[in-house]
Image (tube, rainbow, N blue to C red; front, side):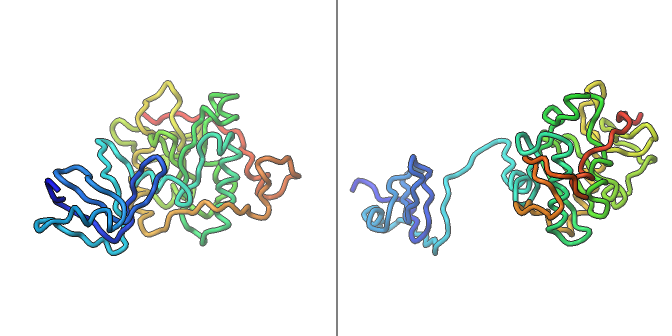
Length: 261
């Protein structure tokens, strides 16, 4: 052999990410390039007097991930079971979102935060039919008066919460939005919050709410998105008779949101 390996890993789970996504147990690296992958017998010929041996002891070895803008942790926190999937086509209306929240609160301790990601008014029937009809805290209050709810939009630049969350975060009609941000309120001047209409600032309309929630919710566990439906929540694919949760999930029209000065 012209050159022995500089580094050899043994005794682990080597995820190759090849066409078959095969998993090996050993890998050799020579001059910064993978020179052998497979089992112990495949890499042994590459071991020389100066080769560094690393016993993985059953640990997993992954290819390096190089990305200038990677949100790996955020992706995990924003997907089931750590967060409700509220993206299209999982939900198609404000009523669907309310129902998903309704199902989740039956599976978590009282007072625990309900989190969700992915809602987009461009795919919510009520908002498409009437562009002035935007998500409101009242849509969530109907099904979750006691659990604080925080739902992030598909872009992560808008946050939709219920009244309980606003109460815990100390956000009310007197809360001043930060520079470049806006807190959406209804015609009565109460915090809504929901995304700002297209004519207003594109910057996150709930920046202070998002920051405050991260601090307040740190002592809570994220909500799990459970597949089992809560008794009393109708299936999204059936036109079952109205039951308490299903009837509450139907949003009540409210005043068009507006941005605070």
